[in-house]
Length: 186
Image 1 (cartoon, one colour):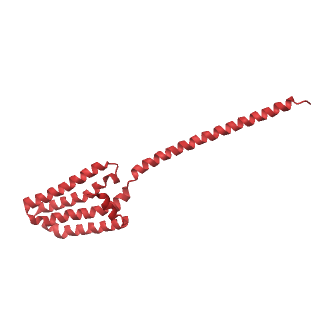
Image 2: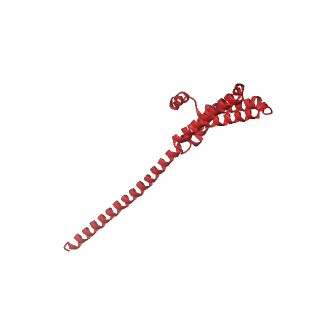
Image 3: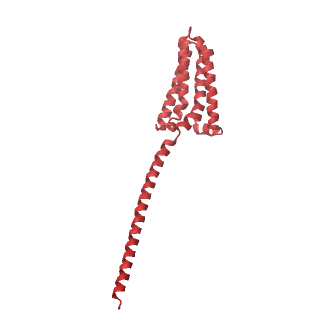
């Protein structure tokens, strides 16, 4: 899966558009659960549980893909967790299709897809701008700030040293002129 090419395709939209699409997806997901999945709870509680599990697992997959951009966790850890969540979604689909029945997939697969569709724009439109990749840049900025302070301090020392030298030279000139005046005949 090439996330960079997907980012290039989706980079045309603003963060506000992603947040708007995410909000719409979340509302559609809630409506799907209220009217399609929750009424099954009385007779098929296990199916409802698997649907919620599919939703949660797929909701976290896009967040795990961008975990390195949101936190200081290395990129490899995020990709590992995203792979685990996708594998769990596959296990849920297999478990539901094999042990319950294939008709149960009409509730589980859309649950996972709605979770993914809600989380992908949420991650790109809200979480990235909110937590962003600024952590590493902030550390570099702090280093630059410290160097700037040192440079200013060194510059001040250098300037003070030059002023002291100029003052000494002025004193030496004054003494020389005074001595010359003393040695002059009356």
